[in-house]
Length: 514
Image 1 (tube, helix red, strand yellow):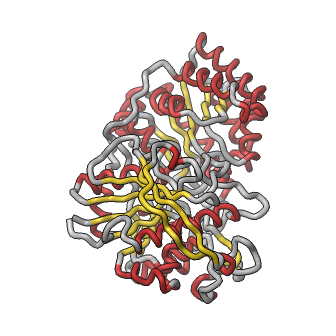
Image 2 (cartoon, rainbow, N blue to C red; image 1 turned 90 degrees about the horizontal axis):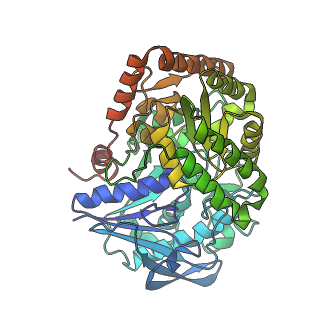
Image 3 (cartoon, rainbow, N blue to C red; image 1 turned 90 degrees about the vertical axis):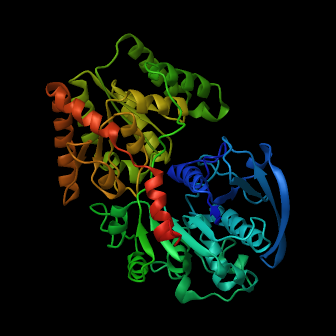
């Protein structure tokens, strides 16, 4: 039996510990590993809250940071569903605080990553101490996820106390290369020198190429892991090339490191899977009822007061849809960020054109999400101006399930996409997707077979092709039902299984025969 440790900022196997697709991956991959007879431990920060949901204190961990002794607590917590050979843990320390994004990450507009660096420095050091003390047993594989966990590789490389970690194989998954966790080497409370004053700084091997007075934690994962993993094959190919935004988002200054990892045989592109078993099932014809229920709930929350007028405005539009059902629903569910909706922010006239095209066939556009304030404001303005745009500015699993079930078309115009899970979930329900042909979207949606794609060699060409492509989609829906039904059926029959993905994990990432 092999013994694994997954280290992540998110884990959707436990309640209230998910902000994005990483949480799905850290929920699903351990289940597939356990099915093979191996043992998995999964650890995340507690964010000063998760240990309170029935957590059992396993041990206290003492370690040095900032020249003083820190004491953190390791709790085993109860998952949403029990699975044999999987154990879930959280690390609690009073400085590992809940953030304002999904109660996990902090949004630090003036000094990005400041608060997150503090909590993940503490978290990673506590995990290193727990591994050293054998809290998870004798480990064969430690699987790290994104920059939040890569400090473990710094400690493994430079801290003599944790030199024993070198006997364990460390795997590093890149979920989103654009978010890199860059912090100063010195002269800042959240600097490397302040937290690790006893470790001489190896500037050459730790520095960010653009900000040479800073450590780049994403780069640490790429430079020091035994295997580096991107979450789709096409995203691997994208990030080996330099970025040229907005036409192309590639290596984001780390392409040299990635090329070196690839040359050394350490870089692998393996597509994420989707869950096809034990899934939540939604009832049909509940999409508007579920939206209204979510809105009424939010209107009672003090934190939503500043959105109250807008939520009431959205509710009023949804009530109208109960009486006059649209003929076509186009939808999106996403974090409202540049990655997901850059095209709409830069070219609002293109989004307005899409709404007008939908209006011509009695169609609506439903968007659910929260995110960057400027994107929330943009879509609230669109909603107030356009009757057929329903913007649900919040998060609700019931509404999300209804959107995936009852939409006719799922729209995903991501500027770049490491893998994407939304298109897989929409296709699982037989909904064709209209996507920008990039990264993981390229690997999962085939134009005119399982969905629809647009691309272009320049920004203007992409916008032009997006609008022309949308015309083509609506034309097929209205005038060629047999072709539409064929694409629907093909989409529903696609299977991006975790079993297939984890077979490749074992072979390439873990170096274990299958």
